[in-house]
Image 1 (cartoon, rainbow over the protein chains, first blue to last red):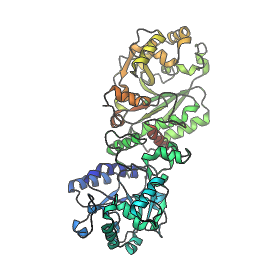
Image 2 (image 1 turned 120 degrees about the vertical axis):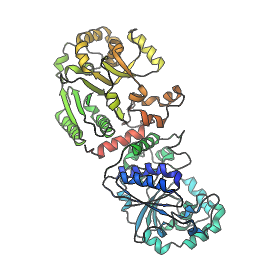
Image 3 (image 1 turned 60 degrees about the vertical axis):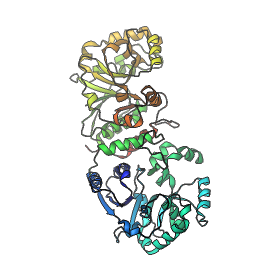
Image 4 (image 1 turned 180 degrees about the vertical axis):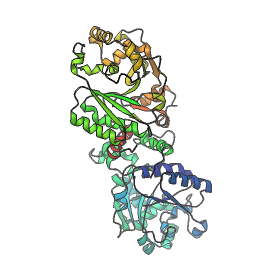
Length: 273
Length: 273
């Protein structure tokens, strides 16, 4: 299975935890991890490669020349790396058909196989939308993209690279960014929603992109059918969305002990393959 | 390493979770699990043995004839199984010197080796006391055992079987129970404290018997040095004390997600050895 991550050096520690949880909960699977980056130093890449290989998997770092996006517009304090996720198909091997993008603030706690093997031949992406009515309404107004049906979260993206090569036009993306600069808050997520919402297959958020902040909210919305046992057994991807992160001091949340245990395990146990 | 458990059929599901966490977090260790019981049916024992063996370890069930305790006094609704923990040395192989007793409502999340190898040659037991001043004072009065210095929790007991064979007199235990029947609340724990407190080596409760109900209390008492990261890295044994258990509906606690994940793992993954 092909896994895509795009990040800077600061996110390497949680990336290791995320990858370890993916490998551990998917025994017997071969993973090729593609890392798109602009400036991670050689020694950090070496240490990350050692980590991935000690756990029986493979890492392929791809450094992107900043000149590539010379003429692309930028948004506030965001760097041009905001484009890596949407234009990954340009930098990945040209014969690759499919890849699963994952944010580093994620734990994978069950098998990813069903997600990876999902048929997305008619869609550019598969992603989950976080169904919280007020947020959705706010975003619709903010982005002025009325054709948008849901607000998709870009932290988990199954990518149909074959179709993307045919249909996604980077010029169109740059044009949209140029025009909407002032309005974009989470640039890549906003672009994804504004330009591609109709070409995204919707994933079950409880299964593939569970926002850990909304445990209580999720229980309320679903008449308590969603309890801890249900989530731990059925959810594949826990996403620690938001500013407070479970690897930081003073974090507190329903999945804190689980995340910290995965930090400890990833530092302690090499997974033979 | 020798592990002792004593329980009835109802506790087999959490026992499996406890054992799996022990095996998983102690790779490369050989465990012999001794199960003292009175009436667990043959098919449940077979299924438990299969579970233990699939994870590369060994199970030794020892059925104790109820006639053995024919003349022993009983306390309220407790059965004679309350004696199994204190008199285990009578039923275990007579050449065994040391064994670690563990309650089933426990998760082992780090290496048990340092605990197991601890020198207890001058003590009958090693156990942790739960240092919560009011409880200690209350128990002192209730048991009228003024020589008692701390109230030890009997959920984790490292046993010096060699010395116990020489020093523990079952007659003395029965006499004490007969005399104090009306006062005993947690019989085996009360007896342990009243008769043997001075012969118990004290264990660090944060390391070897962390009461999961008291996460906040522990943080307060220890000026917040005890945080989630510290506990997950340093605590070996998490003890889910009290009536509310993490495998039951409507449980809620700091280690809920972690416990539920261990249930899922223990049902899913066989540990090769």
